[in-house]
Every structure is written in C-alpha cells, then in structure tokens.
Length: 99
Image (cartoon, rainbow, N blue to C red):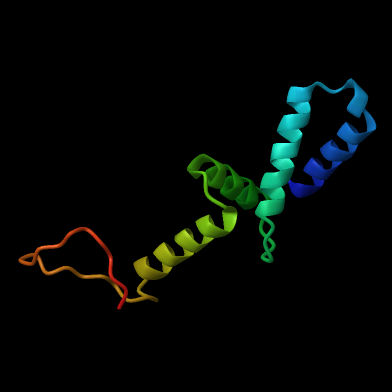
C-alpha cells in the first residue's frame, strides 16, 4: 500500500468514524503508527517501499533498521566494506568484533 492510498483510506475512515468498528479503527491506527515510525528521507519505488514495510513488520523491526541491515550486507558482499575472515584453525564464540 502506497502512502497516498493509505492517506486516502485514513481520510475516508475519518469521514465515517461513527460507522467503523473498534477493530477496524485499531488496524488503521496501527498501520498509521507503523508508517509514521518508518518515515524516511529516501524516495523509493512504491513496490520497493511496500516490500520493505512488509519485511520490517514481519521481522518486527523498524524500516530504517531493515534498510541499514540490507545496505551493510550489500556493501560487505560487494567488497565496499571489509570482509570478515575467520582462521579455520582458530576457535570462535560466534560473536562479531568490529575492526
């Protein structure tokens, strides 16, 4: 759902608030909170934005946190950030140290 279509849905709900059930109002308010929490400064294609919002909700993290994770992994994968190497003969506790 794009921001503009969601804004239209909110306006429509405001016009018929007396006719809406409590559950419908809760859904709209939760979506509003999620969208406000995830407001960002980078304009994205609506399909990309919808995918990010869905994945962030599924992972129960903010959109900005998801974007940071995706960007960092892409930068590491494409060698724009240092690659982490582990000596096969050394022991590790599974934690990642920063360089």
